[in-house]
Amino acid sequence: MSSLKERVFVIGANGNIGSGVVRGLVKKNIDTTAYVRDEQKAKDLFKDELNTGHLNIVVGTYLSVDVYTKAIQGVCQIVDLSSISVSYKGKQGLIGYAHTIAEEKLWALADSNPEQRSLVLLRPESFMDNHFRLDMHHVKHSNKLVSCAYPLNTMIWIDTKDISDCAVAILSESIEKHDRNVYEMGADSLSNEQRPAIFSKVLGRPITYEQKSMEDFYKTCIGFGMSHSLAFNFVSY
Image 1 (cartoon, rainbow, N blue to C red):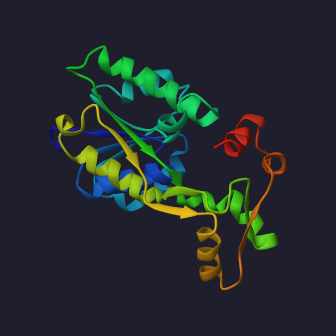
Image 2: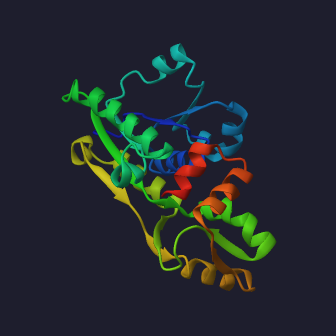
Image 3: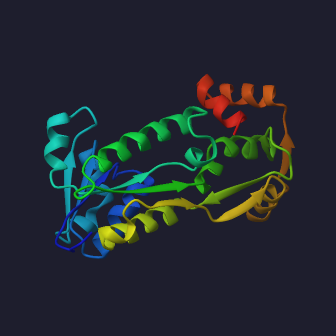
């Protein structure tokens, strides 16, 4: 932002990261528009923020072209939440493909009018709260963490709050400072042996790690309702 009088437009504001961005901006007294599908959920989620006078809610979806077009009038900076998959694998895999294509389109849009359009990309590593999705089932029913990676293999994890805090910092500062920057984001590097040790300490019972074959882990992911493309993405990550 070049002035605190400008308004920040947040897409997906009811989500985990989006809601953190909205709260962080309003806390800094920055006028913010939250674009959401569920108006009542937004009103319940942002009761305090709405009372400040710094938050406005616009209801719509990606298909509400007229509403969306009107709401984004005047936007001159985009801070895009992308994925580290773009850096590692590009278009390989479902997640990498989706974010790489999105980045390419955003770069083309920004570069077609560089004096008026600024772009910043955030590429976070694995979300910490992913532990509560696929891992949660195995921990609950078999006291295990399961994947097809070697026990000593490491992954980098980041708290979604850190991602929203980074976005707030960027959106609170001058557009020129962050223009055309790509920020790769990570925090804790943990091996598949270290992760169950942390679960054991928190839960007060032994949690171990089981390495499955790629085929068996693929079948496990499919059993959780994942599509072939998403399951293959996790197996080959």
